[in-house]
Length: 185
Image 1 (cartoon, rainbow, N blue to C red):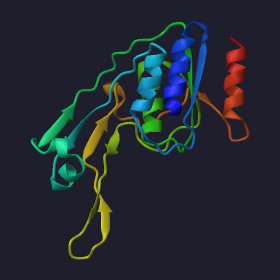
Image 2 (tube, one colour; image 1 turned 60 degrees about the vertical axis):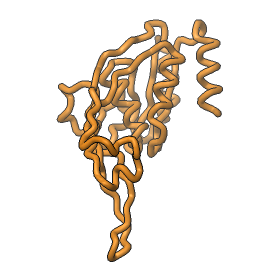
Image 3 (tube, rainbow, N blue to C red; image 1 turned 180 degrees about the vertical axis):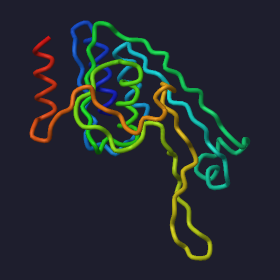
Image 4 (cartoon, rainbow, N blue to C red; image 1 turned 135 degrees about the vertical axis):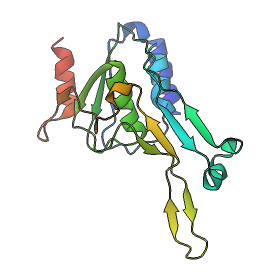
C-alpha cells in the first residue's frame, strides 16, 4: 500500500524531484522488488544480481516452480539507465541486510548515487533463499541456503562489504549529513 503511494507520488512529481533519499539502516530485508519499483518511478534502471540455485526436495517444497530442473541460473548484468535529473542517496549501516543490502549494492555497482553511513556486515555476493526444514528423527529445525547470489559488477565479487562513499560517524546523524550534502550542491 505505502509503496504504491510513494511510487504514484514520484511519478506524478518527477519533473520537480531533484534528490531522493532512501534509508535502509537497520533493515533486515524484505521484498527485493520494492527498490526496483521505486527506481522505475524515477526512470532509473539498476543492474541485476546473478546467481545459481541448487534444486532439491527442500527447495521444491518452498519454490514449486523449480521442480523441473537441477539448477536454475540467473544472469547478472550491470547494464543501468540513469536519470541525470535525479540525485540518489542511500543511507546504510552495519545492519542493512538482505534486500536492504541489495539496494546499496545496486547503487554502488551501477554508480547510481551516493552511499552514506557505515559499511555493511555481510558480503554483497552471498548465499540466500534459505528455506526451513525439520529433521525427521530429531525434529530439530534447520535452514539451508539454496542460492548463491552474485552482485552485478563481477569485478567486485571478492569485496567483503559495501563501503559507503561517505562514512558517517556514530555521533553524526546520517539523515542530517545527507541533507547538508544536498544543501551544499
